[in-house]
Length: 284
Ligand SMILES: Nc1ncnc2c1ncn2[C@@H]1O[C@H](COP(=O)(O)OP(=O)(O)O)[C@@H](O)[C@H]1O
Ligand SMILES: [Mg+2]
Image: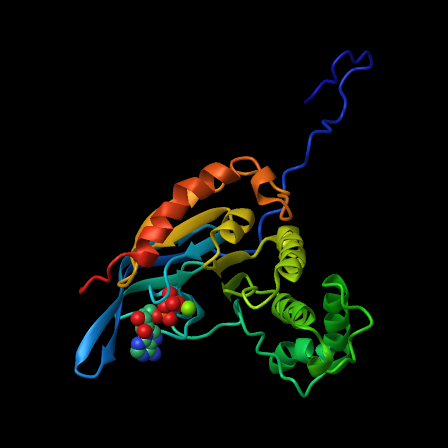
């Protein structure tokens, strides 16, 4: 029971913040992952001894040089790539194939250009067998949430790159995934549009917190969006740093350096990243 300071009439209801609703996201685990590809007669090791635990609802940014295995790791969580060694689980269950729990979003929006915005959002719901009126309603609502009310019937070809990426976000979130895998999703956007779309995505993520694994080559973006940054080495990819970003939310995405701790996180990670990007490639 809580008493108000100076109360004269006895107990009052505690008005401090209610505990946040539990996240919708699932726990993701990658353990002992090793993976390689055949290049002619030779095996090229792409990933070496990766262990990564992602908590339910956590927003983890994966950063590392090109070719270090980031996309391959996302593919493993999505059930598209099976590791040569190691184990991947989603909500404690081994990932054996693709699942409706995960959604995958790429840099190129992968929308179908001959369909309208709403038809694109509806597509995944239709694949799940949802009836037309219900999926229309859900698609319309998600387009509204990403700021595209009035563009439901627009052909994808007519939309700007930023609008297309918002359609892609609506399509991803309409499926209510518990785990969202994003591979440089905003890389193709111009700087101003990118900030707008980032803000929209973060505020939608905050409402019920699916687990997010977000690949980016942009360290600022990782620090501004993530709860945690996982930095990978050059190929074969290993985890060389795993840093919690404790900067409180909401963060100011327009002015990165105005956020508490941004400079220190950036300074601490940038030289490490540069070393991995520009260093000599290992022969492993
Ligand atoms: N299907 C494939 N066949 C052969 N090699 C591949 C294949 N997919 C990825 N690779 C190799 O594995 C390494 C990691 O690739 P990738 O996961 O795409 O890295 P990143 O996303 O970090 O740039 C790279 O050296 C790439 O050339
Ligand atoms: Mg990649």
